[in-house]
Image (cartoon, rainbow over all chains, first blue to last red; front, side, top):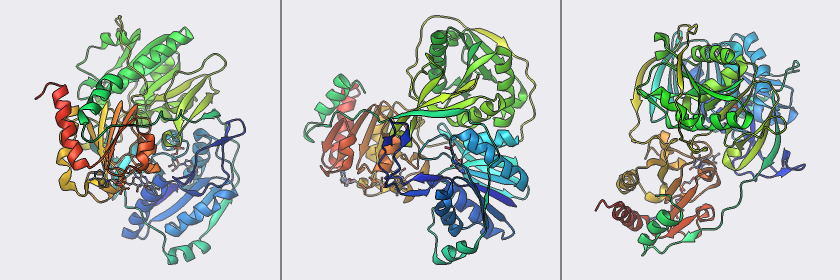
Amino acid sequence: MKILVCISKTPDTTAKIAFTDNNTKFAEAGVQWIINPYDEWYSLVRAIELKEKDPSTIINLVTVGGADAEPIIRKALALGGDEAIRINAEPLESYQVASLIAEIARNGNYDLVLTGKETIDYNGGAVGGLLAEVLDLPYIANATNLQVNGSTATVKREIEGGEETIECPFPLVLSCQKGMAEARIPNMRGIMAARTKPLKVVDPSPVQTLTKFSEFQLPPAKQGVKLVSPDNVDELVRLLHEEARAI
Amino acid sequence: MSVLIFVDHIDGHIKKASHEALSYGAKIAEQTGTTAEAVILGTVNDDLEKLGEHGVKKVYQVQNEQLQQFDSQVYTKVIAQVAQQSGAKVIIFSNNSSGKALAPRVAVRLKAGLAAGVNALPDTSNGFTVRKTVFSGKAFAQVAIDTEIKVLSLNVNAFTIITGEGKAEVIPFDAIVESPKLKTIDSTKTSGKVSLTEADVVVSAGRGLKGPENWGMVEELADTLGAALACSRPVADAHWRPHNEHVGQTGIAIAPNLYVAVGISGAIQHLAGVNRSKVIVVINKDPEAPFFKAADYGVVGDAFEIVPKLTSAIKKLKGQS
Ligand SMILES: Cc1cc2nc3c(=O)[nH]c(=O)nc-3n(C[C@H](O)[C@H](O)[C@H](O)COP(=O)(O)OP(=O)(O)OC[C@H]3O[C@@H](n4cnc5c(N)ncnc54)[C@H](O)[C@@H]3O)c2cc1C
Ligand SMILES: Nc1ncnc2c1ncn2[C@@H]1O[C@H](COP(=O)(O)O)[C@@H](O)[C@H]1O
């Protein structure tokens, strides 16, 4: 079984969100970068678990990013995976990213392509679906569980108010979310091993962008909290009913 | 030229999110001087003509055995056939479980630019730009779409349903339908009666509740409000509650009308998933809890005392006791 895991770089979850250049760019100064949590905790760890069960499994990682994405992809290699590919291009939007990854996926003959549910910065939740259509493969979004039985995958996905269990033949594309696996931290052995694992840098072929982030805005600040005494919960209910019209 | 809205359904009924998407799409059609049309795959018990009340003129209905199985690969090809025949220039999905799988695929198929998770009407005065949430609700972005056809997925609870007069013409559509590769072998309902992402009211609790045995009062409050249940991440990690209740940056993102947070500190990662709620109520015994800064109403005190009082006060309001 050959698995491709898509790894993206995102700001740390506590990063201050601010914009520069007339609100056209995310202010990166002082920001710590991490592996997008959905990619790390769910898709990558699930791939590693599958390899632990079946050591003949090959895991390749792919990221679209400049040299600044290198620490991120190394960290992912330290968690597990056999080799990594960095497509040397600034990620601009999801279609461009998906087109670039699709080329790697097509040439690599993967049984399984895993993405995270979404990146926590641009929240597209799109790369997996775009990739699946470019490759004309089945796709299951928001997967919470993956089992492999020979040539079939058994996948759980969350739907409104419930969960479905689905069978699908390989190859397929999945986007992963909580439930898939339990987060891990890299150990010393993994970190040492990652130093010598192959990290291939490939030049991007020319691809189109179809959309562009033209401006960012911060939401208006909250008015400030109205505190109600714990001895007067009736007053809270009155406010919610009459003032906020929320109940 | 038209605006085409994908209508999603479950258990024979059209989802609330689709009524929002229909209303949204009809507004875009009005704004751009085109007509709004809808596409539905499969059969429902609801009256499709009534979708005209949201402002759509036509509903294309594709009926085929193969469509009983949701498979994004198969559905995409069908939606694309309808879109091409109706000359759709803007195609709208809900940013829900089906839409998340379909919108990107349909976009690729029609060589359209995609804006996922939009939450406002587009600006069509000069090109086409539309607002979406980014950084887990901590900011918004304007996305400019450069292609002739545009695909949008609308966040759930981001657009108010508009209901007026009108009857839609229901048109059977003969599409080529491939056989699905996916096969649903089981489907289960989660414990809650109300789906978390679609709920108007959400009651959520955190580590302040001390243990899973204390959730009874939270469930009662939720029942009284007709609310869905949610929790903070450590609560799900400790298996006090199922993981599908975990909200936040790395859980489910929600935008209900009312969010009631009990014994949750309000960490930045938690806020990221709930800060689009219209009204936030925080109950926490620590006056310094960061959640109060993001709240509209707050009570500083012991949840074990306040929650039962709140439940009975709401029952009183609703005339249930
Ligand atoms: C990368 C990353 C991603 C994360 N993603 C998420 C996420 O998606 N969602 C999420 O929720 N968290 C997330 N977290 C965790 C987050 O940082 C917090 O640790 C978590 O939200 C805290 O949960 P809590 O508020 O339930 O618990 P605590 O922080 O322990 O807070 C408990 C609160 O209960 C109050 N309390 C105690 N007893 C009572 C009482 N009797 N009555 C009333 N109040 C009481 C306390 O004053 C306290 O404020 C993430 C963390 C990281 C690092
Ligand atoms: N620059 C990138 N390089 C590699 N994978 C990416 C990149 N951007 C997004 N992805 C993958 O696509 C998923 C969804 O991203 P998005 O559609 O941007 O929300 C992420 O969780 C990643 O797995």
